[in-house]
Length: 427
Image (cartoon, rainbow, N blue to C red):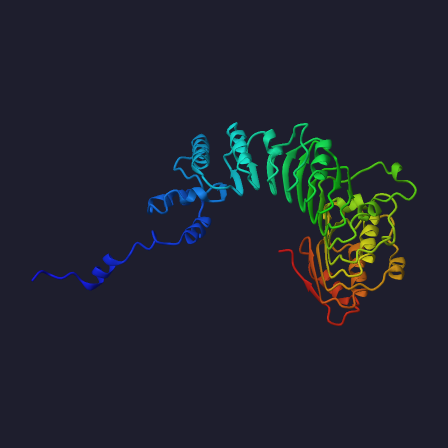
């Protein structure tokens, strides 16, 4: 009799090729979690997997798609270009998302060719991040791509053709380190009728931000600009604005009743979250600072303010926001200590503040970067006296001042019985 094979080995030999018999939707799900490089390599698994990756709707070319032993940036760049060419040439399905972001990527002419191909494919999400070299000029064909719902550009120059009529389906626009002219920016924003999210960081070519977007819900901006205004933005709910230069302006044009604060909130009736970053509070304090806004921010529940406590007008602007936000629950105050070395020559009239301010509904307060000067302590005292439902206040100084500041805070009278003051050392 011949020698029998072990039973376990026989069973293994008889098992079907499970990878080959996976349902198509399961294969697609697996491929969707792989990098483009790993997805292409699955072609060797079986005939059913061969070129299955070529129907992937989301194509991401980043640091994971190219790996070479050499550190030569030219070799890495050339391999990246060949990879993108190879994938786009063999791709046979629709393309929902195309993302090109690699640390060794320059604004090469190949991008124009890829952009044209993607526009013909009716791409929906287009992300281009150029990490090196000069700003890359976006090919004119992209401005004719009406299938776009999300556009994200980094280190690019935008100069649409004269025939550009906007993106009728664009819902999300993210521009960082970009160059575009004043009229181009205004036309771009106003010509996207369904735009819901706008991110704008570190831009040049224009200094006035005129935002006309009736469906805008989210707006995040950080950069150097001179003026900002909103129009047809009644749906805007989340706003974060950082002005990166110490704002200085000719005050003569703000005589009479002019006020940046009033102008800013005129078309923001339903803002829910507001972040006033860098030097933007100084901008809001320009002109006549009202005691209250004519129309309260009844939907505002979260407010973050970066402030110079030695600037009386900034304090006035901050207090105006607090008085005008009856349903505010979370407040974050970040001091600008670099400006607080200059002492205030005139003390703030806190008696008038106490007289004019109604009770607030604050529950959580965080105060960061304070140095223990009197205006800061007065502001904290005011919050404790007019926040009857306050649950927690976290205080973190700019440096380890010691126990004196903590003792001073604990001595303050608080109207809320459950209010807890948490003191955090800067270390």
